[in-house]
Length: 383
Image (tube, rainbow, N blue to C red; front, top):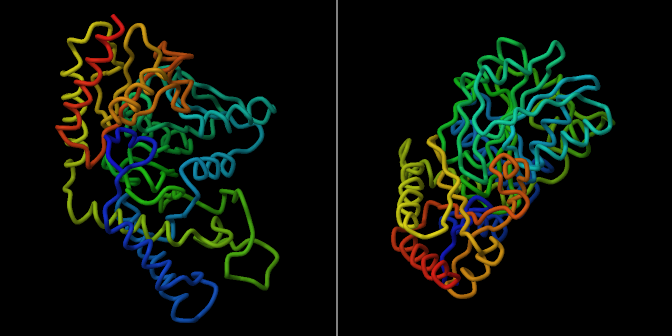
């Protein structure tokens, strides 16, 4: 399909060819359920799953690959982390740029009187901001590493160091940053990391992972769901060991094969800062090109960015702009609130939202130039 795809913050596209090859290989040549039998196909499926755990552990600085837990997506991982680590009466802290995958479970818990909730309503959070809201019963700090609206990256190391000193559990929403920003769970004091598998890791849609720090006592962390694991089948109780404690039911092995291929592709082809450098170069190129457009507003900041830009043009709603870009120029972006109304309240763009472009690994200079030309024509047509 022709056209320009600038919606990589929703899901990356295209995927490396090796991802499709790995998914199809599992479906056509293996097909068995891992951990449910001792036959050759089942063992091959188990090998695929373990290889992906090893690649995830290496990517995020874990020693034990069994602490890489597969989930449906980042939202599933966040719900598992949030609901599993919180008890009635706990005080929970989060940021002001969070995605609804964090805000909705927290608001639900608060509205039912289960937790106290503090939201630090800042675009960038400092240790002073965090210290100001910590209470005697503060249990968990959940933070969006990179905004899916603006691409802003939080400076988490000092914040999480403070939490470690205060014995506060740290949960990092890395849905937007994983694969683009270098993350080391030990160095950055991240207790639990939630990520999608289909964005910066370049796996298939409907995949994700929850990673648990080697030093974190996972037995204090209650599973969100229980059921068949292929292990300890004689017991009516959920296994306490990893990964089975948090993985019930048949895994999405085709998706996991795809994540493994995506991770291997990144490992084989890119050094430490290649990806973020590429994405930000395209972002700056786009913003420079649009800087002379009358009525063009971007919501950039001076921080590190994941290659995301939100913008508006005076006189045209984001939804209308998106339709024109798609229908007339075959350019795909994301208009509206991007499932993050809290971020738009901070930016002053609620309720209409913004038009968002999120650049990916396979986007080019030519695509950015074509998009700038299209936006200039649209802006001129409404004057």
